[in-house]
Every structure is written in C-alpha cells, then in structure tokens.
Amino acid sequence: MCEIVNARWGKTAHITFLFFAFCANIIVTSMLLLGGAATVEALTGVDYRLASFLIPWGVILYTSAGGLKATFLASYLHTVIIFAVLITMITMVYIKVYSSDQIYAFLEQTVSYSDAECEAIFSNEDGETFFVKGQYACGPVSGNNGGSYLTMLSGDGLMFGIINIVGNFGTVFVDQSYWQSAIAARPSSAAKGYLLGGICWFAIPFSLATSLGLTSTALMLPISAGEAGSGLVPPAVATDLMGDAGAALILVMLFMAIVSTGSAESIAVSSLIAYDVYRQYFNPEATGKQILLVSRVVIVGFGLFMGCFAIVLNEIGLNLGWVYLFMGVVIGSAVIPLWNMMTWSKASGKGAVIAAWSGLVLAVIGWLSGAQAQSGKISVATLGTNEVMLSGNLIAILSSGLIHYVYSKFIDPQEYDFAELDKSITLVEHDMSGLGAEQQDPVELRRAHRWITRRGYILTIMLVVVWPLLSIPAGVFTESYFAFWVLVAIAWGFGAAITITFLPLMESSEEILEVLSGMWNFVTCKSGNAKEFSKDEEVEEEDLKAHPD
Image 1: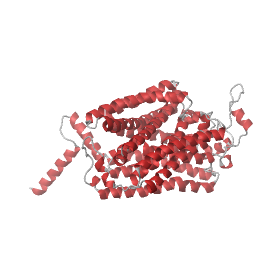
Image 2 (image 1 turned 90 degrees about the horizontal axis):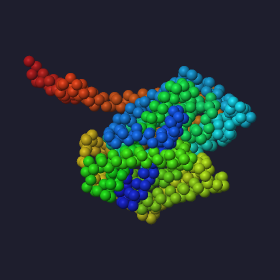
Image 3 (image 1 turned 60 degrees about the horizontal axis):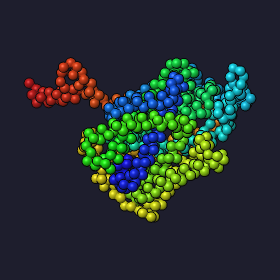
Image 4 (image 1 turned 45 degrees about the vertical axis):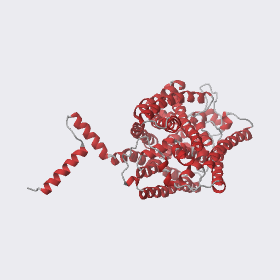
C-alpha cells in the first residue's frame, strides 16, 4: 500500500501513511495478545504477562523461517481448525444440549428479573451480592426495544455497529496484510477470493455470537462487562457446556486465530520496514537476500516489542474491547484518502496528507471532549463508552473524507494517469511466476474490477442496510422468528466451514497431486511427478494415433 502511495503522491504522503500502517498493525496485534493472554490466564492460570511473551513466539518461529508462503499455508490449516471448533460449538448449543426454543425462553427469563432478584442470583455463599447493574446480564437491557436481548432495535447495538464499520474499514484499507495478500494472488482469484472470504468470515462473529454469545446471557453466567470485553465469553460458555474439553477446544481455536492473524501482521510489519523504510531510504539497491535478512530480524523484534506493549496496555487498564473500539479513532482518517488514491484521478497528495493528519487530530479532540462532556472527567472508563468512541470514529472518517474531497476538487485538483502507476513501482526481483498473459491483460483486469465492484456494493448494502432494516419490523423477536434466525446462523456457519475447507483443495487439486506424486516418487526412488506423467501419457496417445500399428 505504501509503495503505491509513494509512486503516486511522493515522499511526504509515503511517510504519513507509513505511520497509519504501523498503527494498524500494532493495534491489531495488541488485540490478539490482550484477548489471547486474558483467555490463557482464565483457562490455565498462566499469568497474563508470561502469556503475552510466550504467545508471539508461536508466530515468530515459523513466520521468520517460512515468510509469506508459510503464512498462506498455515492460515488455511488454522482456518479449517477454527471453523471445526465453530461448528462444534453451534452443534453443542442448538442441537445437542439446548434448542433455539430453550435459549429463547432463557433469554426472556433473564430480562424479567428485578434488581433485587438479580442481587440474590449474583451473590456468594455468604449471601453477599456482587451484582452491579449494567455489568452483568440480568434484568432489562437499557436502550433495547422492550428491554430485550431478542431485538435489532438497540441503541448500543447501533453505535457498536457504526464503530465496527469504521474500524474495520480502517484495517482493510490501512493494514498492509490485506494488501500483500491481494498482491500475492492472481487478480481474478483475489477478486473472487476476497468476496467469498468475507462471506465466510462473517460466520465467525454471526454464528459464534448467536451460539456462545447468547448462551452466556441465557444461562446468566457470572461474566462481568469487563471480562466480556477481554474476550472471556467463549471460554466461559464452552467450559460450562463441555467442561475441560470445551476449554481445550477454545484454547486451540484461540491459538489458531492468534497465530494465523499474528503471522500476517508480522509479515506486514517486516515488509513495511524492509521495502518502505530500508530499501526506500537506506539501501535502494538492496538485493532479495538483504531484504529477507531485514524481514527476519524485524519479525523477531516486532514479536518481542508487542509482548511488552500488550503488558503495558493491560497494566493501564485497557482490554480487547476497549482497543477494538479505539481502532477507528486512530486509523479511520486514512481510509477515504486511500480509497480516493485507488479510484479517483483528481485525488491530491497534499490533500491526502492534510486530510489524514487533520482527521486524526480532530478525532482525538472530539474523543477527549466527548468524554469530558459526558462524564465530567477523562479516564480509561469514560473514554471507552460507546457514545464517546462513536464520536471519535465518525469524526475521523468523515472529517478526513470531507477535507480530502474539498482540497482535491477545488484547491489542488490532479489529472493522474493510472497507467503510470505500474511504471513507478520497481521490483526487487522480476518474478512474474503465476502471472500469465491473461492475468496481465488490461481487459481482464477491468473485467475483474467490474465483477468485484458490483458484487461488493450489493453484498455491502444487503448486510449493512437491508438485513438490519428487515429485522426492525419484527421488534422483539417471536419464538419462531428467533428459530429462523438461529437456522440462518447454523446454515451460514456450516456453509462457510464446508466452503473454506474444500474449495481451496478443489482449486489446487492439480498442484497438490503434483506435489504428492513427486513426494511418493522420491520415497520410492523414482523420478517425475503427476504433471510429468500426464504429459508422458499425452505423448504416448499422440504416438498411438500417429502409428496405430
């Protein structure tokens, strides 16, 4: 991403968006370690400080040795395991242990309790209550239609949804790991793969929240809002449902998620420093071997730094949920300038720099002012409320977008020829493997662009606008409506698991067969592989046709 910025807008913009790229990688990795360390401590008793240092080493070891190729292969295996645990949890909640009707009845009962009843429920053996209204799932939900959990009409839900969209726009546009995965894939595969990957990924928050998330509330497990913000809901519910086996499954799922995403983030940071810092400003003639060495050193250094940084964040009282909400405040102002860079010929580089920094400053001011106005003081708790975080996120993305548009349209309009972009990016090694003539054909690239653009907009409108609007008339869900909702969640989870597991195998069947046959021939002291064998068969068939006798 930063190389493209440098090619189009120059050094100042390059340094600016390098800053935002590093912020994105640090924030995402912080969330992984904060949630991971808290879960490991809750399930195993290992101190979170030690866990914060040990977890990165699972990423460092194979990422520094295998690089991006190892990351791609490991990510597939990790994702398959994650989805296997996901469908196991869905099955346990809605098929084996409970049903949608039972969970519905439990949720209705949860919001029916008075404060006095909640205090009695959440009390210790001596009768002393630890219930704090709003901190535990008991009683009506403030801001929800009818005080119910079974509704889409939720004030906090709406605010979280908007914050979620801004923050995830930030990661998709600013996080280097998304760009390098897209660039490493063939254009046609990247377009279809990202769309299908997004659909499959949605099963994780949707199906997991519908199963483990609602079950924790339905069973009224003693999980505080702070513990939920640290990511402790899934392990608590899994342990309640399956005992030690459930805890073990969640630990495996957690490790797979951390290692998969953590390796991508490590590769992203190493590529930024190796290509956009080391090669760009210190050694323009760097060889592939030198860049590889720098990348490996950075991976180790970044892992150790993040272990320390996660401990610092935890010590000052920040958890996974707080950092997640804060993400858009920091990187949201870079989103629209980067979008304009790739799609708008008039986008100004000076305007992008001004918009990104101004958006960040305005967002932080609005965020701090919001906490002061709402609570009368500035603290970790007051800065972490939905209203305050929403103000910071919206100011970041909207102010930068407005500033960049005005500057590019009326002050410094450009007429950039996108055909020049490719000429301005230099390769370390002119490796075009996997890119045939068809993959470099401008007509095919435009066709792939149209394909993903149309379907991307349609899917976005369906998920962000149409689906929530269709749920509004339902008000508080009826038992049958909730059963349908659960059915969709189960179908989405199983469908995504099947797709994510078998589609890559089907698409790569020829290459997999070639590798396996080559390994078999090596073991049996033979030469060749499946690809060469098929070519020999074709030659023999042609010989038979030419000489039938």
